[in-house]
Length: 298
Image 1 (cartoon, rainbow, N blue to C red):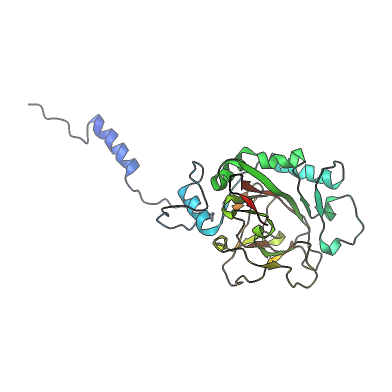
Image 2: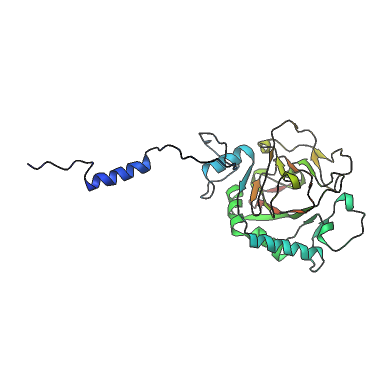
């Protein structure tokens, strides 16, 4: 009787060996780790997530990171072309080439009494750009909306829109922003149905005043805010948390142009001085889910 082919020499055996190579654990490759928002996670996941919803976009590690830390950075989310279009529209607004109903201009207190010039160098912030079609297009970007829905669900509203043009510090440290919780400024609840999408319009690091966050503070209640006791003055409505622990670990979010961070409105955060000769720009709105039960704060 002819001896049967062994499994190791049959065509079926070859296919089995290929399959086993895919499902068997292999030694980790020799790679250099890169810091990301999901760098440190637990081996297990909670039975129920509070701050994120079931979705097909965020990985389990990304969801867990946001649950534990209150923020999540997504790299290269907004294209360079869109960033340049937003920058160009901001400059047109500063030159008064376009009039936007309801738009608010903000200037740094250190240059507030200087002679006004129609130029972006004296405008540190524009707020409420909902009536500007070009800037509001940021709020409609499909990739932004998809990520927002991971935190709020569908049926959302953009509010508190803002483009920040952090100026070079005038020597009085007025370009910094005290540590605060954004829910302090909002007249509606619940907080867990609100999220910010904050996009860097250029490289942002500690030299030009990147965001500083205190991971995990989104699980704390809203704290008392007031103007900080700073020498040199404080810009209007730049309120700060009065009783947070300054020894808490903090993370400086170094971001490239187009990177976007999503964060909870109770997360304690702020930004440092701009020590460069250039202006640091970012654009963002907060989003709130429109559902029965969302209420205004009386």
